[in-house]
Amino acid sequence: MRIVVLGSTGMAGHMISHYLEEAGHEVFCISRSEKNGPNSQAIDVTNFAALSKYLDEVSPQAVVNCVGLLQKACEQRPDLAVLINTGFVQKKVGITFTVFEKIIRFF
Image (tube, rainbow, N blue to C red; front, side, top):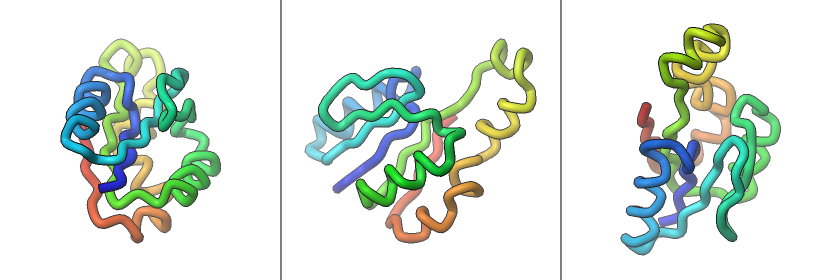
């Protein structure tokens, strides 16, 4: 299965990406600032145009969303915490998501 993992270098994202790759899936990783492999891309997920374009190009069958801010960051940037921790991806690029078979959200 062709899968995009958002937040692929975070606590959950890196483990999930690794697990899916070992299980034989074609995994595409997105993280905020790191490109750590041939199928990885550094994209700020609040850049909805760039994220939507990438998802359209990859055409995944599933998206695993591991993007989330932890407590300290939430306290420092409550506006960003609300945007990221309340399912922004499904709301902002919902048109793209309608073609996927599955959406899994972790945070």
